[in-house]
Length: 236
Image 1 (tube, rainbow, N blue to C red):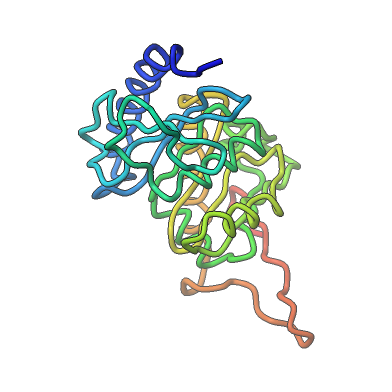
Image 2 (spheres, rainbow, N blue to C red; image 1 turned 45 degrees about the horizontal axis):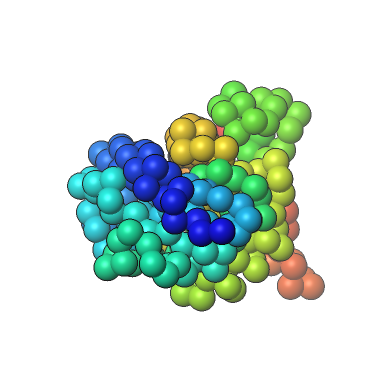
């Protein structure tokens, strides 16, 4: 059965939502230049996503500026906008959607997560902060560690690193010296989570002492000492 009869309606709805959300992120300074990309799942079997088109100002997208991609992030044939192309990062969007079951994935270039990953390259631990409720976690007695993976241009490698550290209760990933991925049931839940996570990561960065750089020091056997977990009071 052809997927195409569903596309006009699905793509129009997805395109409108993606354009509106992209404009919102651009206004926040989270999608500078032509950076960042958003996606929504169109179908699961086979996996199909609508992804914002590559190389475009995210403040000026129209509902037509989307590309349908497969489970590898490759543009599928015979789609309505064949001239538009997806970012290579669409491959990581697809991997996240497949592994997590998310309905939408957001990739933005917000600064706080990148700075936090520079300081805590093995993962950013959070606890005793009210805004953790925005991630579906407890505000107390619940340590949430946001995973950090190295940056790279091969989305299969990044996807493997993401999957190796994936936890169903932690809907976010930091790519070191690059940006943030957050996901949810839809674009709105993903945005709410991204906004809460920005606040959380700004808090730990701004309350941490010392110069920016890996916060854990190597031990005699070459392993890193555990990173202190910061609370809302800024103390371990």
